[in-house]
Image (cartoon, rainbow, N blue to C red; front, side, top):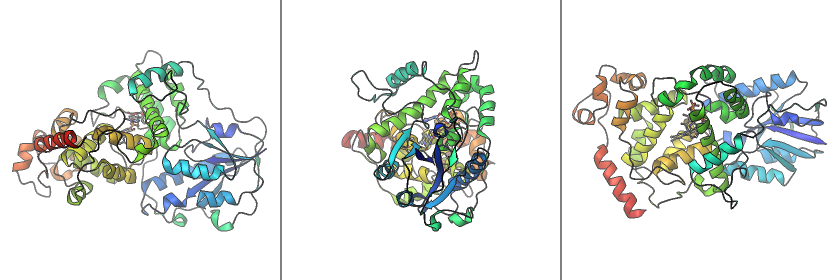
Amino acid sequence: MKRILWFRRDLRVEDNPLLSFGGEVLPIFIFDENILKKLPKNDKRVSFIFYHVVKLKSDLQKMGLNLKIFYGKPEEIFAQFKGFDEVVASGDYDAYAKERDTKISHMLHFRYLNDTYIFKPKEVLKENGEPYLVFTPFYKKARAILAHKNIDTAKIAEHILVQTEYKGIEKKSEIVALTLENLGFVEQNIEIVNAHLKLESFLKRIDAYQQMRDYLSSDATSDLSVDLRFGTLSIRAVLRAIFSLKGADAEPFIRQLIFRDFYAYLLFHIPPLETQNYKYNFNGIEDSEKFRAFCEARTGIPIVDAGVCELLQTGRMHNRVRMVVASSFTKDLLLPWQWGERFFASHLLDFDMASNVLSWQWSAGTGVDPQPYFRVFNPYLQSKKFDKEAHYIKKWLPELTHIAPKLLHDETYLLNSIIPNYPKPIVVHKEAAKRAIVLFKKQG
Ligand SMILES: Cc1cc2nc3c(=O)[nH]c(=O)nc-3n(C[C@H](O)[C@H](O)[C@H](O)COP(=O)(O)OP(=O)(O)OC[C@H]3O[C@@H](n4cnc5c(N)ncnc54)[C@H](O)[C@@H]3O)c2cc1C
């Protein structure tokens, strides 16, 4: 049996089920031209992926394997592989990934592994075989299955992994001199922290997770989303570490991991969710001026602008801020959630189609299991509660450093004051929220 082992969202050797396939194998990674050509030269994700692909190549070398790295369209690269029996890769469920894999499955037998998520897409179903559409019953069923699930480390195949040389591949698609510049990108200054160290450090703080995770300066969350996105840490390794804890209250964290699975599961079972509302016809009002103000962090709503600045500078954004930003975007600015989703998609280091789309639909009130449309976050009350001393706001908006924290949570003050280099709010929250509710009701 000759197999292609296709690394994609699993950029690691530890606990990687791909490596439990022995015999003659060709490990590959493809820098996908279809995706890369749409990205700006300074995309932070490409620097992150590049770093980990180089590391993967070196780690595989220690096992006697040579990762072949390509640049091009996956289907064109696969068309040139001859003499293989199958390709093995972990499942990926967004529309582009499915279309890509379908094309390749017509050329070569495609064996899917479940590595990215805890559960396979059809593992947690209702008694009648249908998918759950509401999180809590999904969580209960998933939790019961997880209690007995095998989450052991993937075994590396016992027989010697043999490097199979491919035949007939055009030289141009294999990257020989591997540099970011050769891929058309400029190296970005991003902090890369070993995922195992992050996990270790988080486990010492896990007891404070539930109480503190929403506070913006608390450092209470794990910061593992980017590692789970690119598979630089195995989800099973995270679960093993959590289950080995004695006496800690890890359930709120496990719940979030299951949330991640739920979103991927929903996208798998209901693919149109990627772009279309599940509930309500109301789709916001297209207003390019408001959208520009949002993208430039000039809405005059401090917590929202601070979040956008954090995102643009680092590729990150705290979960609570993501919720407030998405709510303000869809209910205060009344913009289409799809615009906000695409903006996040272009900048988030941990961008994951399922988590992003479903979270935006949740915030907009249009998704499968959404926040009710009439429950609108007040961004000023949110910042007052979760960033009382405005440390977060001031970190990302230094032009507000000299303003007393309580005034930064006070819409009336912001509407009636002139702050050098900072705009007045472009909407009045109460009026905007009322308008959103009326429009939802009318067009929903
Ligand atoms: C509008 C919006 C867009 C989002 N877009 C993404 C995205 O593109 N990619 C992404 O990974 N997460 C997304 N999230 C979810 C969440 O904000 C991030 O997963 C979280 O902030 C990552 O930080 P952490 O690793 O410290 O999380 P922790 O709180 O430590 O949580 C642990 C892990 O659970 C998962 N998780 C936590 N919260 C959620 C959630 N609400 N939904 C799904 N999974 C969750 C993540 O994998 C995370 O790493 C989005 C949330 C919102 C409101």
